[in-house]
Length: 325
Ligand code: UFG
Image: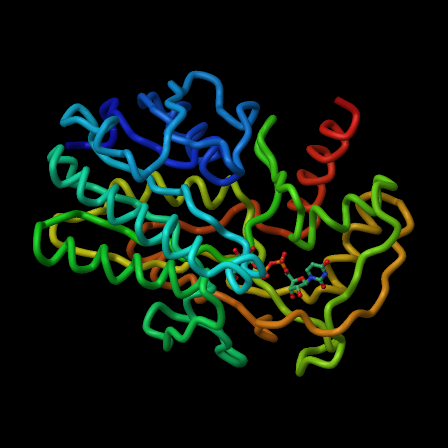
């Protein structure tokens, strides 16, 4: 079916940050969206206007899927690296077990298209240089391992049953889109944490290690605007081909150090941001930067909003609104 016509999509995890922004883009393109979310980490306020909502688990997807759906966009997952080290079973259960149930339900309902939220954490600690989709996968934590296992499951489903699937490997997502932005409890991500310091909600930010082999000794990450990322999902729906599992990195193609991010927050907010040097965080690779070649060639996608100042400005406006509401 052509994605230019109005289609009906199941969006798992659509009450979360990335799922919510992607659902908003689908709705703006004139599609029908049903969000399936158990609200363990998502928020009702994170639901985009116009989406139907089902409060439920992906493990029970068979109850909610029927042949009227054109595709599934699968965002729902446990996604904290640290938690996955402490409680790996939760990651195998939610991410792998939950997705197995979802794939089985899709097959039973005859829903033949999937876009999956995979992650750069599948690559592990790759050293310097931009990561391509053929770079070695050697995850350093159960979160990345569970997402890689799902990628393998999806590949099997494509080969055996003709599923059309795209796994999008996100790098570091940032920024906000309208009323929708990043909120986790507890917060562990760099940009929202630094913004909490700017808002006076936290005294200082810890810099996890300054002895990495990078320009200023702090880790380099590839930050991508959440709206750019969301747009890539619509491209993925268009190019998904029965029997093919396309794996595609989604990043900006360039990296920023932790200190560059903190400095940008200082400039954007005009606030003081005290920083404390802390030990390295276990499992953190020194550099994670995406090659954007596959995304450009296969999805016809290029990032347009992923300059760091713009991303931090959007995140700052969202954080301020949220703090005062
Ligand atoms: N950092 C700090 N201080 C903090 C928080 C983070 O110095 O208080 C550093 C981290 O050590 C890292 C960088 O800031 O070097 C970014 O850390 P985030 O926690 O914001 O993001 P990660 O790069 O660890 O992880 C993100 C996603 C994961 C995904 C991964 C893949 O959160 O889900 O990208 O690249 F797996």
